[in-house]
Picture 1 (tube, rainbow, N blue to C red):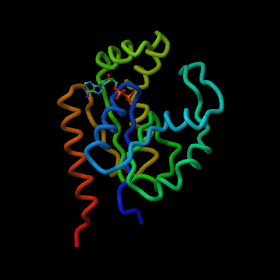
Picture 2: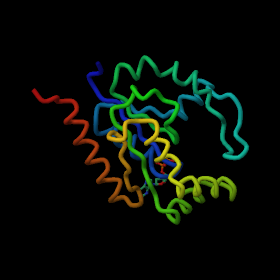
Picture 3: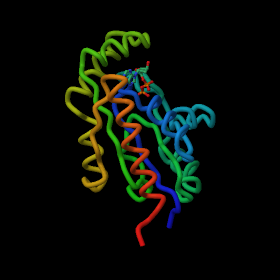
Picture 4: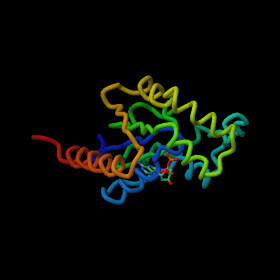
Amino acid sequence: MRVKPNILISGTPGTGKTTLAQELANVTNLNFVSIGQIAKENELFCGYDDQLQCPILDEERVLDELEEQMSEGGNIVDYHGCEFFPQRWFDIVFVLRTDNTILHERLSQRGYNEMKLKNNIESEIFQIILDEARESYDEQIVHELESNTPENMEKNIEQIVVWVNQWSTPAD
Ligand code: DAT
């Protein structure tokens, strides 16, 4: 049994996962776990996806790398996918959602080329990650969060902090 919860923050690139997860880690006593960063630091890749134009994660090695830390609890995991994690790892899953025009602007600013932009915007339109989350976890623990404005971000942080505090103090 974990004494602190594990949270998954997922969503299409640019929806605000890293911003939300880092801010949450600052205001709670949970660890920020960036899958991308861990993969980079430990070279946990096994190829390159030409269509999505990003390295392909060596999922098995990522899971091995994180198993012990996840079983201890107290982690906020940031990743633009969710189906390969074991269901037992997470107590709650948030999928951030952003309107197309806003997402387009954020990803253009990030310097994504036309094909990468198009693939990611389409992924958001077809709610690929939300569906993936609903298929991979108990629907009751999967929550869609709007992430268009700083006000959305603030409200999401507030709500998740309340949830974390309630989780840390189980009822009698
Ligand atoms: P991700 O980790 O999902 O790729 P990010 O946290 O890096 O996304 O955010 C991408 C950019 O968008 C970054 O400049 C911060 C901004 N942003 C994210 N969420 C936002 C929100 N709810 N309101 C305004 N700006 C936001």
